[in-house]
Image 1 (cartoon, helix red, strand yellow):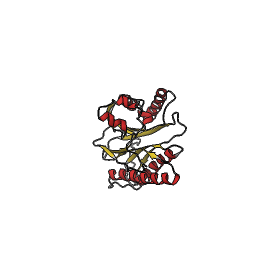
Image 2 (cartoon, helix red, strand yellow; image 1 turned 90 degrees about the vertical axis):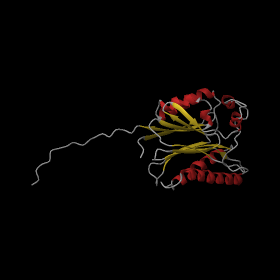
Image 3 (tube, rainbow, N blue to C red; image 1 turned 180 degrees about the horizontal axis):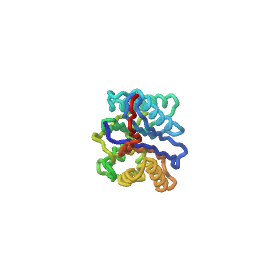
Image 4 (cartoon, rainbow, N blue to C red; image 1 turned 45 degrees about the horizontal axis):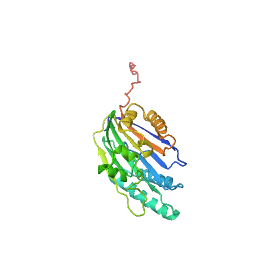
Length: 266
């Protein structure tokens, strides 16, 4: 069994958009004690289509996680979430004559000191070890491909004119989404995770995100990150949404009983 306590929280801001099209949620599995899930979806499509797509991702995640058992396969669960959400989003797009799409990133923490995550699109997961950045997901985007090919730098990718072009999303009528997985075993106190949309990560370095999460509770970190993101956006910010999951030392047991001398039985 795990030797840590999970602290988690979410943060969200509409930015300078007319509508909030991101969705975020934290879930516990009713049939699998000790399992928890964080999920982020960044909807795209305009005129509420994107919001509906992101909402469908979160609803599908909850529905399938509610039916998850300790003997179930976590990766299969994440795959089913993407497949089912993709199908419903695609069908809803056809019926409403819209083209809704959504990104997806989800993290599952197990009671066996394991973290398993999956993603599609450019919503990210960051993993931190104490105050140090450890790794992050690689965006399924055109500019990330350019970075991999050495044609531009990671900083140049943020302001590239094609930075909003994704090569993998849920809801596409032409190309089914693919999933990339990550995992980490032997989790320990001090490990933490940040899941977020591009409305957050666009304004921070890896080291800044690591420091903010490590030095604060999830709520304090949320307030700090939103404030800084709004300052740096300079009235041109996108929807900003994220979830923070921290593994902290469990509270020490407090002994509140009093020993008394037993009386003689009569």
